[in-house]
Length: 97
Length: 512
Image 1 (cartoon, chains in turn brown, blue):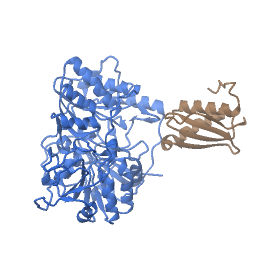
Image 2 (cartoon, helix red, strand yellow):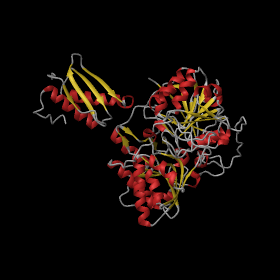
Image 3 (cartoon, each protein chain N blue to C red):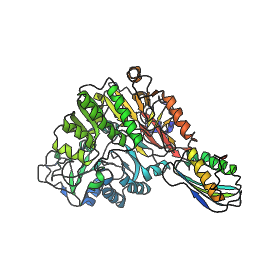
Image 4 (cartoon, each protein chain N blue to C red):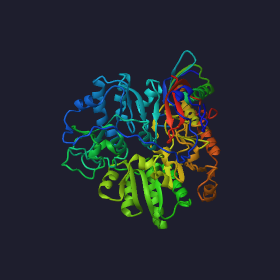
């Protein structure tokens, strides 16, 4: 699926993550900013990538600002950002959830 | 070599500094030779000075050990004033030996390290920029972290030999009689600074408030003081204490505090004349409030409260629920003022408070203590010094010392954000698991298996689930996932002393 517009989900509150999705040309590129990057960076990028793949998004630039979010939060924010970027918020992708 | 909490210690550093690995929490009865200061006799008629620069120049020489206290906390002006002059005068190779380092000192400590002015540090702790700077390997020699009791011991034994102590006080007379209770920048107890005043070769008092001679009560005495320097301002009163102590509304902290209170009141120690120490965190303050109600309900009074004191504790004194406060430090203005007005709030020095090598410290008489933790592991070892990222960001304080209480309770949330508090192995061991009896989290408690008596007393308290510490660790891991291990270089950036001077852990430089 093609990203139609840049979209944002999440806040900068602690235990949240803010995901910004924009058009990309060269696969899924994730720029992660996190205080726990050393311990959980790989896991965070894996969760984001997995969700985007379920939406069949092949090219995207992701800016993720993590404030110690758990995996379930990362997943929820990525889904919201993906649907906004794809312009499909009127049809929630239940199968991805 | 490995020590008795299974930590690998750097052989080269251990040999070079002639240090011994940690073995046991038992202190025994060693024979101790104390050190004494070397002084220049005077009648004291010419101590009062205007120029701090001249006094620094006259007293501080290359290679010396200098000290400060941290009673002004983040309102401290004295440290930066003195360190600025020392750096500018081009003095080199100093050992910095303050009772602790607070955030307001960070910039100048870093500058002093970069200038070669400071090459060794011993402290209770360090935070923020300075912790990151040291963890990145910028100080040539490892920092030695000591507890408040451990510092008192090291000073008495001569392991820390202070050449010049620069001690800020909110009042002093022209001969150096001073206390922490009167003036603009009051902080109450001078507990940590009393060690420096007694054992340093030269004692320089800095004050913004010269009072008529003789000044009483004199916590620091004229017999100990070489110079009294008048400065504009020693500290910012608004930043010394936390002001009015706020009662937490965080439901997680309240749940933990309530559970801590249940553990105390259901334990065999909750009886007439018991004694306790609480810290200054949100949960600890809430515990004091719950404990007050329990004491009223059961008509039980405490013989003493110990350690760092807050207003909720001095309120108990006023109410007659606590007979004495043994006060080494005051965390807020209310507690500092109470010391002034209540004769039952006794100022004690760090040795009296917590030193293992004296003829009986207050902590040895303590029944119950509530302490915090950055991490606690399945062996009950506690870390209050380094973050899960390996970076120095804490202080031992009285943690190791107070943990010798008959019942030591660690109050901590299971996880903080994405970081587990209960872990398989702590990043840095500060207080050995042998001293820890009960862990209280928001989901339930874990009791050290070596305390079968406490397990029997606490296993059937309604509303308080008892888990093994392994079960709590697994619950935490199920929430946050498994962290990747931090990578370190071979360089040792800090050593953690146990209160008896043996080495309980080493901190390595974090790989970038």
